[in-house]
Length: 186
Image (cartoon, rainbow, N blue to C red; front, top):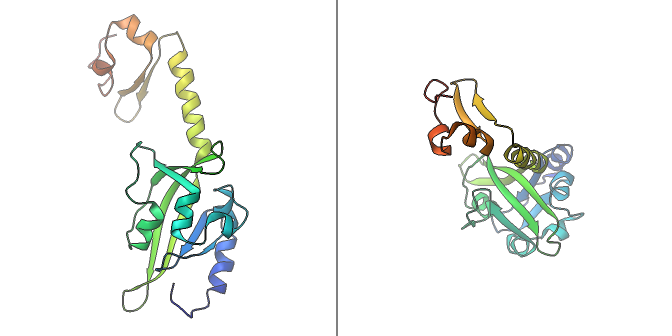
């Protein structure tokens, strides 16, 4: 954010959002986080979140959902001026390893009239419940001994099969997934 600019009105708007918003200065100071962003980190104050990017990195361990360790935390990518969306990360507090969250992130880089970054924001959506539900579904689907297959309606291609289906048909998973109902003889 631009030094000397009062962001009081902006903070009032952000405070009422259900999405988490973290405002970051180009000098890597975390200037503000709304209540939703704090809750999505299990924090009650900005101090608990970290007043700088380095402090944040010390307090929270992030892992991209594709299980690749991030070269840069999303907050660092915002500072670099990178625009991104739909980045999903697992967030774990270093001091409370049993407390973890899944966030879908996007960046917002607002610029001044000259095109220089003037307001950097990391926007968070807590998708923990969604991912927990998907994991429960996968466990239940895979544990079900009855043959089961899930087919995408838009193109009639198989997207999931369980062991019962594979045993019944004699097919391998690779021979079924991605194939249409017309290609796999059942």
